[in-house]
Image 1 (tube, rainbow, N blue to C red):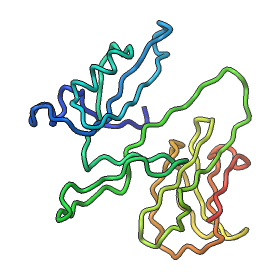
Image 2: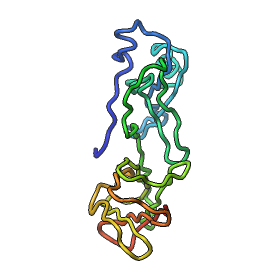
Image 3: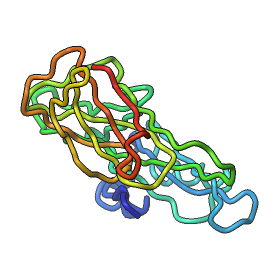
Length: 206
């Protein structure tokens, strides 16, 4: 497994263990096996508002979840992001006087769909919503999807001119945090190419 997110079993969450199972906003996750085929489960991700973790878990049980139920850390530290829809949940302050430092990267939970049909390999690059031009010395997320397992290279171009080799080789896991050390101009584009076959690539116009 190349990537994973760290979670709690819902019964071990600090809100339940240390805060008397208080009602709050939580994201709970469980699997639903509808066809009795091992390893072929549906994933249920549910957000509850003003509910306890016990109530959230009980609802998943009623929906058919039989195995472990987990939850990502909740409250103001939760930041959920979708490359197509943009921000889903943004950290919010419970006290306007507080000044916490939020992480640059949200948690990602990614999936690949396997198929027996032969399909042409391809790379599709996502765009942040709304469109954002990378700023010098500021983290920028490069997001993409592909249907192969090999590594990729990421480069910045101005027309046919190579401006920067962002990463000569990185795992094709769909997300790369880039901190430009140069000023990025409108009209530049990012190209992500298969490390094994440079003719397989996707481009994002900035």
